[in-house]
Length: 308
Ligand code: NDP
Ligand code: OXD
Image (cartoon, rainbow, N blue to C red; front, side, top):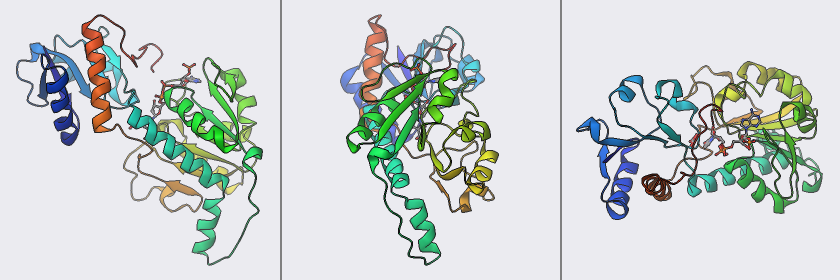
C-alpha cells in the first residue's frame, strides 16, 4: 500500500518523515517517481490531470493539499475516488490572522491613510467604534467560523451567510440565496470565505455590490472566481465601495497589465491569506489515512455533488 505525494518538495521531506514515524506500513512515494502504480491507494496534490488519474488504477482517496478543492478539477477524478480537503489547524490560524488584519485595516481606514501619504496629505478621520461596524462573512465553514470567533472579542457587529445558515455563537446568521439581500444590506465590511462552486462563482459582482451599504469595503480571501473583476473598479470609482483587499485572482500571478496593481483603493496580496503548514498538515492527513484504513469517516471529506 502506497501514498503518492505531488506537492512542494520541502513539505514532502517533512511529510515523509512523519509517515515513517506514524504509519511506516504506508510507503511514501514522491511524484513523478510513482513506482508500481498499482500500489498507490492515496494521492495528495494541489492539481491533477486526467493522465495522472488514469495511471492510478487502485486509487481510493485524493487529498487536496489545500482547504479548497476547486483547483483539482473533479471532472477528471473517477466517481469512486473519495476527495478530502485539508483541515489543517495551522492553515486556519493563518487565515484568522489575515482576516483580522484585513478587517482592522479597513475598520481603521488604512487604505485612506496609504493614499493620503502618497499624496503628502495629513488627513485624519474620526475613528468609528467597532461596536458600530458591521462585519459580515460569506461562508460559515471551518475558516469563516474561526475568523468570526477571533473578531468577536473586538466588539464588531457580526453576521454570517451560508447555505444552511447554521447558528454561530455571537453571530447573526442568514441562510441561502433568499436571505442574501438582507445579509449584504447589513455589511460595512464583507469577507468572502466561500468555496468556489457553480453556485458561488461570480458572487461578488455589480449586483451584490449594489446591495451593500454605500461605501462598504470587501475582502476576498476565497477564490478569484468569486469576484467579477471587471465590476470592482467601477464600484470603487462610483463610491459604492470604498476599498477592497483582494488576495485571490482569476489568473495568478496577476499579469503585469492587471488594473488592480495600481488602483489606490485596492490592496492586492499574492494568494497568501493562508497556506497549508508543512508540519501540522502532516498529522491531519495521516490521521485521515488511519481513519480510512479503519473504515471510519475522514475529516473534511468533500460532497462531490455539492462541490465542497
Ligand atoms: P468549508 O467547506 O468548511 O465551508 C464552506 C462554507 O461555505 C459553508 O458554510 C457552506 O455552507 C458555505 N457555502 C457553500 N456554498 C454555498 C452557497 N452556494 N451559498 C451559501 N453558502 C455556501 O470551507 P473552508 O472554510 O475550509 O474554506 C473556504 C474557502 O477558503 C476554500 O474553499 C478556499 O477556496 C478558500 N481558501 C483560501 C485561502 C487563501 O489563501 N486565500 C486559503 C485556504 C482556503 P454550509 O455551512 O451551509 O454547508
Ligand atoms: C487553499 C489555498 O485552498 O491555499 O488551501 O488557497
